[in-house]
Image (cartoon, rainbow, N blue to C red; front, side, top):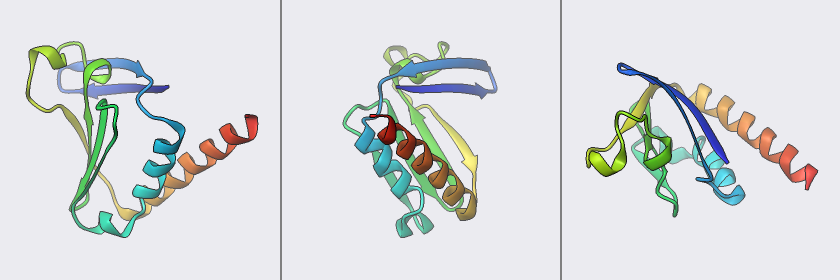
Length: 110
């Protein structure tokens, strides 16, 4: 289950959706630090709720359906909706390590 708390120029919202499988979360943790991220790259999943794109120091997280803010519903707006973050490779590595740690803990609980 993926939970988000987002804020954009129009307000704040929360969303929750079973958007990633365990193996997809592992794929995401590896993608965050892949050599391809030093250039343009993207990662999308079978369930089209989330897509990640990295380009020249900017990480974009595209949101669909239940993860979008209520004022930008997917069925009313064909325009892509994303949150953009200026990030450095070191920060991506830190976030990747956090995700890998969380996934390891989940695996140990199984």
